Image 1 (cartoon, rainbow, N blue to C red):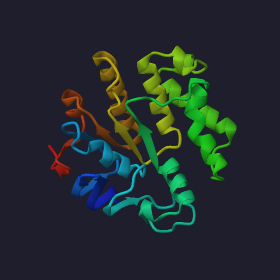
Image 2 (cartoon, rainbow, N blue to C red):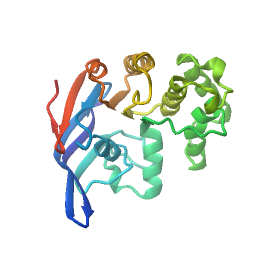
Image 3 (spheres, helix red, strand yellow):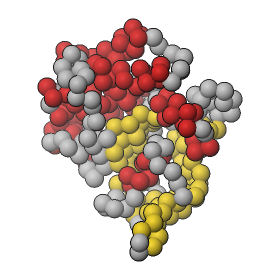
Image 4 (cartoon, rainbow, N blue to C red):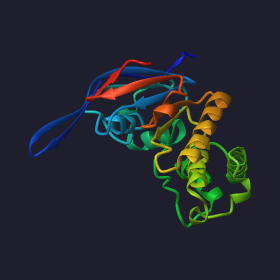
Amino acid sequence: MTKDLIRIESLEKSFYTPAGELKVLKGISETFSRGEMVGIVGASGAGKSTFLHILGTLDTPTSGTVIYRVSGRVEGDRDDEVNPFALSNTELAFFRNRVIGFVFQFHYLLPEFSALENVMMPGLIAQGQGAKGRNGGELRERAEKLLDELGLFARRTHKPGELSGGEQQRVAVARALLLEPEVVLADEPTGNLDTATGEELFRLLQEINARRSITFIIVTHNESLSRRCHRIVEMADGRLKGGK
């Protein structure tokens, strides 16, 4: 299996306003490898979140290509090179759920469900999409194991409102890992946490990256945390500047 996981070529994204075209991403070409942890830094408004949203197929590029090398992750797809933006809506939803994990600055946990139920949610959605995989008991076992790894097993029956900010974000990390994604995209995952809690969360992400060889692409304003990544790329004026 090739080392490269994501290959981006000449990626551009524009938004259109009454004042005219606003180019946010300008001809980005980049490759992300399996198992690496990459920090994306840059000033606010540089295009970091837009770039991450396109990688996660939450937004579409104006031009350019994004290719994932994930053989067999999309039902019926026999080629290991997948252009997610060429998939049908159903295929794309399946692809996103099985290949990509998301961690945002805000946890987006469902308040009426327990921590355990929130972690299980991607698996339940996958079952609703007709995907083959773990049954309900296996999903529960997997979710409990992840919460245990993240130090939250004793809190698994608590609802988000009964958890601290750091605990809520760890639940969000467990949810992102449930279906064993190829890549986790994290947009300011420590942004709403105090320094000590943010440091602890980042340490957990490093441990997961090392133990599971999952690719992490992390947008962060925290320079001390970004320096712990395998490499750093800077987003400036819609372009990525080389690794540090």
